[in-house]
Structure formats: C-alpha cells, structure tokens
Length: 140
Image (cartoon, rainbow, N blue to C red; front, side, top):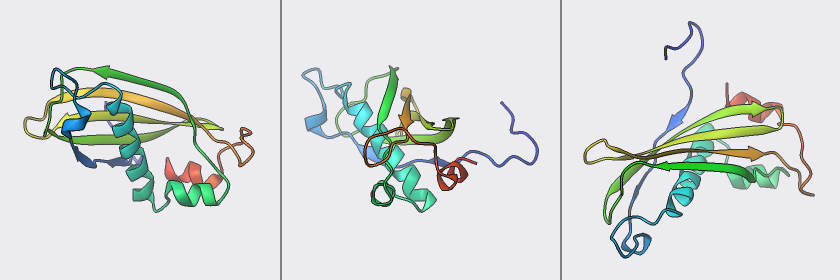
C-alpha cells in the first residue's frame, strides 16, 4: 500500500523486549497470554513517543480500556529471543481508537505474531466520552 501524497506516514514505535524464562511454557515457547502484555508495552511506548503517557492521560481524567483484542500467533518465540513490538495507532471512531502490532524476532526478522486492540475512551466515572482533540491529533 502506498502513502497518499501530502499524508504523513503513520507513527510507529518499536520497543524491544527479551523473552524471560518465566514467560515460557513447558515446551519452552512464550506463553500466549504474554503477547497481550507485550502489546501493552508497545502501546505505552507509542503514547510516550507522542509526549503523552498513560499516567498523564489518567491524571487528566481519561482512560483507554481495552474493549477488543486479537492476536495471530505465527511462530513460537522462545527464551531469550529479543522481540521488537512494532506498534501503530489508528482512529476507529469519535470515541474509540485502535493499535496494530507486529511482533518481530530481531535475530532473523521473522514475524512471530500480529494483532490489534481497540480501546474506548472513558472518563473517571467510566462513562464513554468522545476523544479529545489532543488525542485525535496524536493519530494524524
């Protein structure tokens, strides 16, 4: 897919993690639920890269609970693999946003998993609210 003229490329962050022994199962493969934790690492770093952290967002009265998640496991990651969590943000609706993830093993460039999460925007009382202009700007 090519980028439209005059449209900036999407913001992508690529934090790395190393698979810890405690994150593997009896077969020596990273346990499947850890990928959702790694997605969170990618999300937090994506926000941090914009200059806005989850902590700052929550201090301002907003939260982004996960309302949908999906992960496709392509290859097994094993103990001590260094993984890059490539994360891209996207607007889904006036009150929802999403993040796409690609987990890549750094030693060989193999994509070990892909996935996405969708988040609602809620206030301190847990009520759905529209995304503030500041948040929308982060995705453009």
